[in-house]
Structure formats: structure tokens, C-alpha cells
Length: 205
Image (spheres, rainbow, N blue to C red):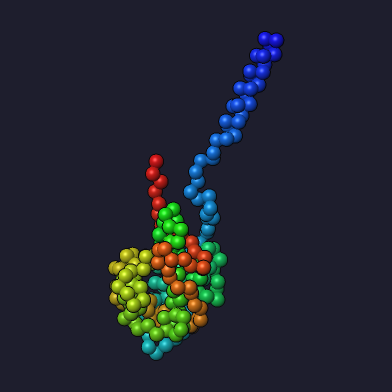
């Protein structure tokens, strides 16, 4: 009887230990609901159309700068999610970029990279050269003095005026591509369009 009782105690202890181990929750993973993407970063820049308004040197320099600055990485549909649409090079991205924290905002602020081909209705066809230069060097939102939250304009602020004009000339000389991107939304507003998250977050331990 003593031996049997002793074995029962051992068995009970073992069962309790297993139960405790199986009830321990897995460590919190803040990225459990997120999928890691591989953005496309290297692809051809569109060929500009020759124009008497701009020199060959300007267009060549502008094309080089647009490729160097990686404008297509955001402004080409599908590029940020690793599936660039070659028919929409620089024609805007239908997937937005959230610029507020995914850990704090259920409905973050979202920017949809614009169509920067010269389409008159959905692109920058009606923009003046000066307005384009300002957008490149200062990063202002349309009809506003507020800078775009996800455009890396601080890195472009030191671009010379000549280079900014070359970029503007190149963009104005592209074949227009009709593509309307969704409208930007402020934090707290909801968008029905898909978006990815942008930002750097540090874990507090």
C-alpha cells in the first residue's frame, strides 16, 4: 500500500507539471499579425520623350537622379510589396504607407505615393516646374505647407536647383500613365485600400 501510494504521488506530480508546462503562454510577438515583405528596389527608369522644352543633358541627368534616389521604389505600383507593375512605372502606388504606429493606431495615417507621370488628371501634368522643384526639395503636400510624412525629402533638401530642375524636366517628359491612387487619410480615418507600415520602433525591456 505504501508503494502504491508513493507511485500515485509521483504520477500526480508529473501530471501537474505537464499541465503547468502546457498552460504557459507563448512569448508575446508584436509581429504575429504581420507579414514580412521584400520590396523591389532595382528596376529600369522609363525612357523620356524628347522635348524642345528641355535639353538632352537635362533629361539624361533627371533620369539618372530619379534612378539614384530610388523614386520608383515607392511611386511604382506594387514595388513596395515585391511585385512591381512594369506598365505603371512611376505612376503611383495603390497600396498606401502608414506613417503612424501600428501598435497604437487601429486606423493609422496613410499616404499613397502619387502618380508622378505627367497625366493631366491623375498625375502631375498640370504642375508647374517651380511646384515640382518645391515638392522635390521640401516635400510639401498638394496645396499645403505640411511636408509629406514618408517622403525622404530631408535627404533631398541639399539637391542643387539644377538637379531638381533636371528631375522635374524628366518627369514632365515621361509618357503619361493614367492611374488614380487612393486618397491619403489622416490618423483616425479609415481607408478601404491596403497599406504597409513605415517606421522604426524600439522595444522597451
